[in-house]
Image (cartoon, rainbow, N blue to C red; front, top):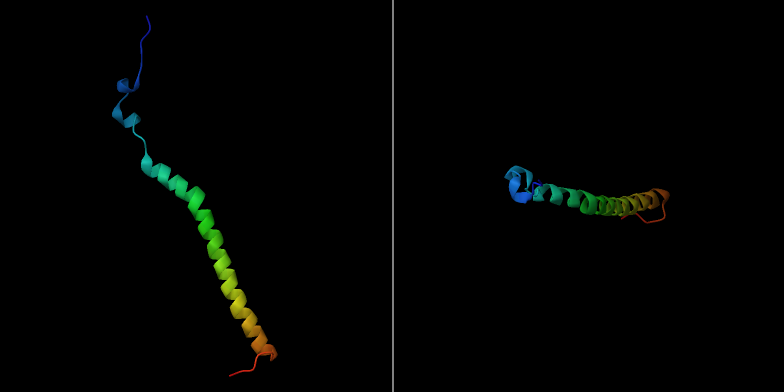
Length: 65
């Protein structure tokens, strides 16, 4: 004798799709690395601009106003 088991035989708590967990994983895998890299690029560009201008002022290449 064969007993057929389908989704209706399992309790509802085992059949739910955890959409929130899937969304969090997608955000962590796809969005966060891009945000970190873009944030680093913006930070590097700003710091490079500020520090190179400061170095040029200290060296006397740009006249002080």
